[in-house]
Length: 514
Ligand code: KIV
Ligand code: ZN
Image (tube, rainbow, N blue to C red):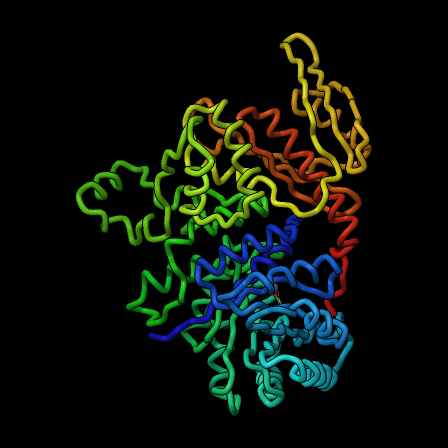
């Protein structure tokens, strides 16, 4: 059985999803879970983008033990030096260089002729190889590049000692037939191609990202790049869980496998969704809430008679199971700690104490606490940055005859206490107006969504909020048994992330990709 290497770029291309902003601690948390899932390679970020990105990549590099950690770099020496700095302490570091090769990019973005593109890439790989044993070279927009030039660039990358050559369909333009054909062409026309691994990196603009990745495998690709839940730039990237399950379920056809521990997929998907604020649609393949639900009578009848009539894979395979009852308000710290370990959380004593305090508050409000509640609590906010605003208290008055009024008390990072009051079109609007006054931040609410974590009237409510300010977007999340409190928490969390992004990352959104 052929092994297909999995290159996860959730923390880099995935983080390029509009509004997604993971802090260092969240990146490390996701990286640990990716290791548990069994990915081979983790692209942790783009160190040259900002000092914040560099520090986050470094934290991931130091934390990860069982996967190669990769930093992205444009084909220029300063970027390569930033990756060198960021990957200090990594067990198995790798540099990912890219340069666009398509006629459109050459003419309008790079303003370079083919020879200049080749020379620029050659010098960059040569420089990079002085410092890195492992260099991956990507031909950005390979999907719209002439086949002969792809072959020429691949040959050059092999001569310069790249160990992976990546051929991305950067704009999600190709059909599976055309994308597969690029790999076939390169395999048949590039001397020495057996010395490198060929990699596929697809975007989902036309809904083809997974199909194209599988076509690449059928035509000789050794590595698939993608993200968990398929998040990423624009319509997203290849969803890695879809590739892994396609290879598993159709082993007879593909004759290839990944090293995924499949039962970790559900948990990884949930963690990425929570920390990025990108909600997984119910009908999403493999990890959507309805992916294993059978609604029609005919299907249910078939399932009762013989599961294989309508089920090609089981929810258990990917680790979907009923959320178990965990403990109640009389449970002690020791039992709580054991349970966290069982669920796979690696927390230090201080974090356990904070989590236990939150658990006790929740246990007073909610009779039964399930594993889902615990996940929601623990993944609420993982930050190592100081909070710019802290929500101390919230008061809302509401009756059906008059406009609701909210009073909030915020404390700023330098200890200033701000009390503000406001009315609004509804209870949530009045809370948000009061927080705007207290924070003195001029922001626009770009998105708001609410869902219950578990069933029942006392279920935890989880609110996601996206705020924008002068072109910067930040997502926040709040959890509480009270949806107004959850709404306020999500808003303050989003504000904190927005200020953090503005201060730490600057206008990273506008960095040139040349
Ligand atoms: O889509 C793309 O081409 C990329 C490159 C940087 C590999 O993300
Ligand atoms: Zn990409």
